[in-house]
Image (cartoon, rainbow over all chains, first blue to last red; front, side, top):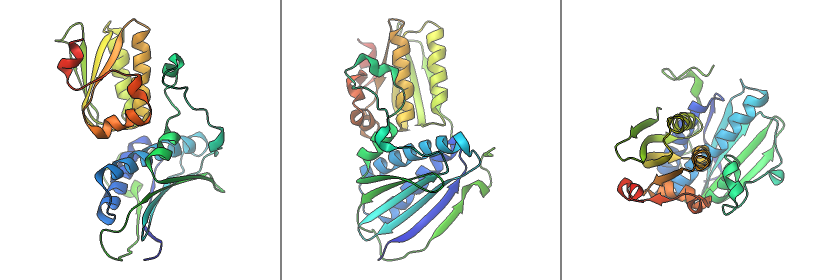
Length: 166
Length: 112
């Protein structure tokens, strides 16, 4: 098996869609990879953090742009990429909350997303693209089944019964 | 996806807020609003019961940190009930187990 695209989907830049991305990623990971439940939970959380950042980035300059999700698999790993069309950022220049022992810690309600992503998955990269930022999260694990490589594309905004992205 | 929020005032001076569902950037504002509402009602000893929470990310953590800060500014406190390792892990990774008092049951939390 070579590296292959398993699934890609575009979701509107609206918070209610993040749960859908978590569900899809968890379903693919659990059905196609031999991963412990805890690892799948870790991946779900990392994906949620990345999607939250992507939606915020899109909303800042291109609110109608979707968040683009891709799931790739290789013989020994699963990779999830989350791409936005935002202004970009420098991951080395982020401001993190102070240590938990510092009373000032209570003044920081944000800033945990990227440190969490880096801790939760085996490898995380943050790349500035032409149009925004791409976050790639990798978990190592072999396949559950054989070499089927069907690619699925979903435009979630077209599914009936979902809230309007508006 | 809706967030379940149930308030139990029967354990005074504690107010128990049971949360059910997933707490992320979509649902966390409801939790924040409820905490603000409780504080405005003069309820300054709040126990947040997370036993019904299936998912909690950093947005949810931020709301809880904000709630704790708000309550401490009123000489109160916000404590948690949580036994599910999946949720506890988020507090452990971020070091917030050193910030919050986390109990195994509501009975333990209100016994303090």
